[in-house]
Length: 128
Image (cartoon, rainbow, N blue to C red):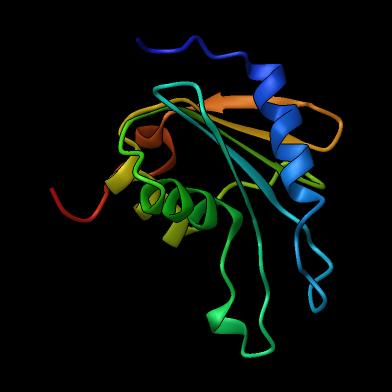
């Protein structure tokens, strides 16, 4: 059974995930909350490395954690940053490949949000 999306609750989960971020270099914390088709919420946060290209974004941490836990169907993802910034290009590609066209909720820490689709975020994806 597909779960209904509670946007505000999913944003609150992403805010909680953001608190776990490890961002000693940028001081820019990001949280993600990915809702699976069975209602499970998987958190992701950005994790920075001194070798900056090896840093992982919150979106990819959540998606890869969900997949490695056996989830393959998703209903929504919420992202929270200080200022409501959009996902990077790498994350948009991973979202396209693994999430399908689920709602992507992008919010600032004050819960000012917009809901987008992956086709709005990445109109010309690579692959498929």
